[in-house]
Image 1 (cartoon, rainbow, N blue to C red):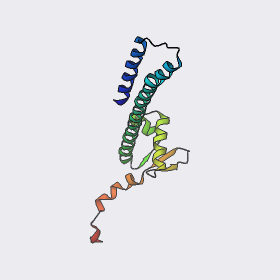
Image 2: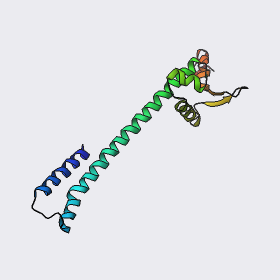
Image 3: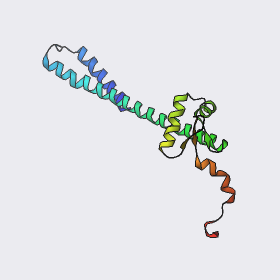
Image 4: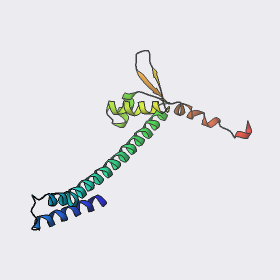
Length: 143
């Protein structure tokens, strides 16, 4: 909103300069034009673009969180082991986007990487593997 206000101010100041009797070639007029029109316009554009970048970063973060949640659901269904092809197919993602998401989960130690004898990379999720053991849980003091 502030960015839009600065752009409106710059536009009004430009209209005022164009309607005035000032000589546009005068150094003082050019300086005043820079301060009254160009500076607010540049600041307004910078604010609007900055807000847009922050919103895009939030959308990207939310998308990543959603993908990871869906990967975890899939890992639970597949008993903790997934390939990029399985994830890409189930979530309708591109292979490179799938690999980036899975690799990010490995970096954060949510998943590990294993490899089959045939050279297929398998992402394993220990937490998803151990969900079957939740039926054997008991109170801490019962031990």
